[in-house]
Length: 492
Image 1 (cartoon, rainbow, N blue to C red):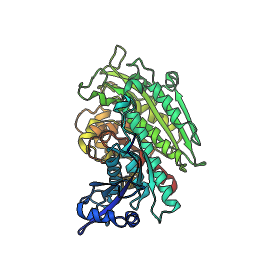
Image 2 (cartoon, rainbow, N blue to C red; image 1 turned 90 degrees about the horizontal axis):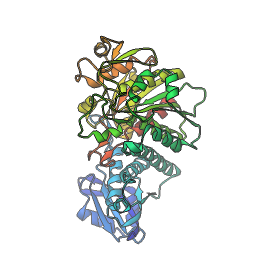
Image 3 (tube, one colour; image 1 turned 120 degrees about the vertical axis):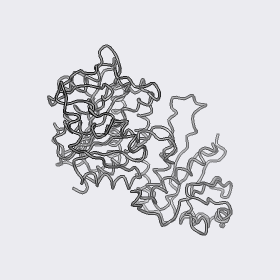
Image 4 (cartoon, rainbow, N blue to C red; image 1 turned 45 degrees about the vertical axis):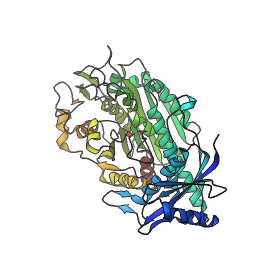
């Protein structure tokens, strides 16, 4: 049992003269006769992102964590392409919430808004999520409740913004859970069932989980060629959320390789366990639609997720095999570990049946993307500068950035100069320009003029570079996708 019922997280701006309590914290301090401001003057926090925990200054909140917010003047940083004030608030809420949760002394944590309730809620909710559901009870972290500590000037819109932040962070946590789940507990079949359970009951959402026969009827030979190496049957998840009648849909296509061994072109053993997250694109699609529907966003979105495993067996693709995609194009499979683009090819072909305004595919596609950008940003290839600009602005707002890379004709011959077929599934100059040649391959299956390809291989997990995510699978960039799609339809 917790020693204390409630803890409070407050912010302090860092100034040249020392820490200065936020407006809400200042008001609270006045209720305890200035004891908090007197203490932080002596012991801090002295730096951004540092927390100081105080005990029994208040009868209502016996544990209080004060976190450094950085300068009050923080705003958009052009060099970083980031809204630093919002990011500072997310990080402070996260650090403060963890500082008291890890004491294992409290049942509820109240977090102030620090001028941005949505960002504060996101930071706390993301920071306290931890994947331990498969551990014995004695190894699990204490579950604590997160509540909004509203200042005297908090309006109904402040409470609404807080709740929105909690919902967006919860959607990202859903993506993290799907990604962390071991491959034997998140097969294509289980993923399909989990999607139905997650989205069931949400207004205006329709879900279909198609089977192998449906894929065969659609002539998805490229997708099925990857699936045939595993005993687990493939599934193709299709989700419709239309809260904008009279508009053409925006189609999302997510790579859903529930485990990727590399197939016959098998991967090294080291870190192969992380390939349970090769369905991160599909997880992002499901979680983004969850956020849109839960917040009643006025959009018309269709989500598609081809799901299978890529394993070596007597029935698996072999290097040099030729397969036929849904649009009739033939593909020479020179590397069976370049399987994500094979299943996306058919997903992209099917997306065109809905006559979409635009198509976005998202995938943990290439190790080259991780080399290029690390975990700093999602790599984006697109046929539309306007779409990228909108996506970039969404990333500035959420703190989950994107970065554009070239979709140039230069890379096309590397994936179309094939001895046996219409195209190759791996660039002839591989590994040079690996992420760009993968995008060039996908473009061979896109006719829609408005298309974005997001490679999330670099951002799929987090070590210690982001205070509000911690170690493990990141669930990025769900919140960015939510804002991008919401803004796209609102602007229209």
